[in-house]
Image (cartoon, rainbow, N blue to C red):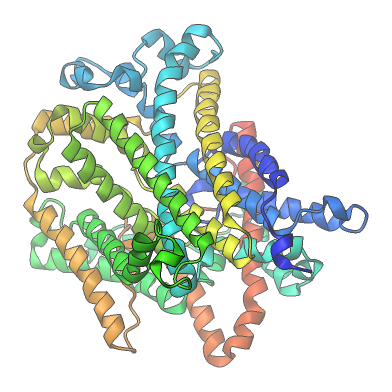
Length: 635
């Protein structure tokens, strides 16, 4: 049977994906756990359920069975809808809308500092409307409340949709280069791809190693979850070992917080990272730690932010973006020259098939519509054209680098906290260069610029990779991704307001955005020369590491791991030991057992992921429904 005919994206799968996006987005807005990891567990569990249903009905209702293409379409749509409502998107943006007016006091002087610069069509300033949100025991469904929220939600939804369109266009253009020419590994999607093969196969679930992996990880989660109800049950210490406190003397105490954690799902996901990349992650983590210690020894810690982790990481990601563009320059040139030129007039019909020409035209239109909408939105908000250009070029280079890193490296978690253009541009140019109106909008853009753990662009690219791997035609999948993004935006806003008008709200991440704005406008800091220099240092180090890999076959340190490992205060500190364990196991298997042994071990690591997601996910869902903390399988 023709695989292409089997795996096309159907309207049935799109409708089912949209329907399932509603409860998934609503659940996501209430908990950060699903979207702080690269492989979203709610999407994986739903895919697992659909595969199980497929296996049950395959014999009696073969026409109702979902194909591999349909399953992966639904998975991609759910991942996008959950990500958009996630921890670093709407869970940050929605609190920004009312925060300054509710938390303004005479002491913080917010009303005199920046109230006049806040576009009223992007915020809610009615204290009576906000009282229900922050105090709770109310309902969103009063006409004055709905009217007050409708305008800012509408306009922010327009901006988010425009961002999604630009990301889709960029992914369409670059996907062929990364999928077919460079053949990046896409580690994050290996489990969904295996689960959905041929609509689900019993052979996948018959592996003893799979069930052994499930038993190990689910057993840990089951015991630790029961501990919340029965404290006499011992808590298994998978994340409580802290070795940093052992170093109390100078200069070693500069090492700071250094936990040793063993998350089964992270060990499982890291197993699918290329060996040199997983090695680079934990090595660079300790290189960053040594940088702290050496800085203390040399007395450089007197510099206010030494070793300027955030600027170095920001420069590193910009370097990765530029390298990705340089590697794909021939492909990009071909796309630019031949997209709007017919094959006959090009003189070589083999260079760009008509189907690809159509894809690239869709991409260009998507980018043009998105960038035009973004520009008009920002101009309406009072931003200067030059600042708009600086900000969004910087922003899209960062998310481009993040997407490249996810496709090539596939870390269990990625974090770009506090390194976006909203933080770096004021350091490079000084706050007076921007002025109050621009600074106000930079602070409000914190809502989609905080840490990028659930940025939608990598999920879009992974969807295109799934389409390529299963011979799906991507046109309808692109439409499905756009529809899922729109549903995710509106469900996310609605879920946030619905839940917090009922339960109350403490303010969330809104304080971070307006703390930055308060400091900018109150102190008006000038150019931070050291930060600008270290941003250039990060950029240069990535280029140097890239050259070393190209010139010396024995050089194993990968440049993508350098900025990724800089997250010493959160993500990489939680992750490094799990990545190390996975790297060590994989190295031993390949060295002493070869590729055959490695492939035989894959089901065990699938099991580690599934067991953590099954039992750990159930505890998390139970905790959300019962409004209490039980157990979280990830930090």
